[in-house]
Image (tube, rainbow, N blue to C red; front, top):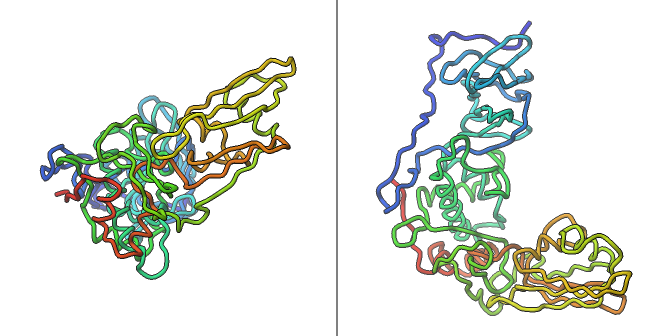
Length: 403
């Protein structure tokens, strides 16, 4: 016996999500309103989904079945449409939607719970799973995934400042009007953990700033953020090629606000061969036997970050070689000593010891542009409110409210 019940379109009347977006005229540029849904790409290259909570299956706008948890949905692409097989029963549509069953508030997918609906749609031969949900619900899954919560309410103003940043970023991505999805679920945009990530304090931060975004001269601001700046934020033009007055580097105080960050200061050590292999992997030198002769900082930006690193080597033929690594490539070329992630920041000093081990002593974590998260937290601890925090890291901006 099948684990699902087929339903007539006339026996189940559920309001579907509108595919159109309303816009606000409260700020100069047209942007999606606060009530517009956001589309989050949860995964792609899927051919099947195992249902982990009861859902209602839609062929486009038509409800066709109640699918119980434990069923496996097998998808395939058929030209411009999709086929779906559930225990031998076939469905065909341009796309499918899964909505929570009547007694359910969320949909469980790959061990996580999500508000809104799941939309399954093909993009060529790729099958994508997209979470379509209200923007404010999305933010409640972003803020606690991106920000430390702390204890009590000492971090609360920083959480409110970050909620406004995250909303501004999301609105900017939504107005790009990607036909399939607005944002990725991970660090390609903002980390989104779904309904299961919700925390009471983060929810309050989102609710108390509902509809608020950061603007400059009446238009949505370009927003970046990072974990800790190391004492001075970076000019966006140096990292992202964006030249705007409110994304110039600012001094984070003396001592820096973000000096409370865990591992604010850090050290990485690279044996000679490991460091040489990083240069080869980055395509900076060809494969072969090289030895390190020297490594030094050639130049720094105004923020104190390394803008050019000079590495001197010689090969097994005795030929000398100099490698120049620019600031934009340093973190990805060198990586951490373990090789598992980018170098934490480019605010560092470097030297080579007598054993030819490269030692990097650095500060901060991330690209350094925009909001310094740990700096914002320290300002919140010291009594500054969310507007003061945002003005500090984005001077000249204002907080505006979407309609």
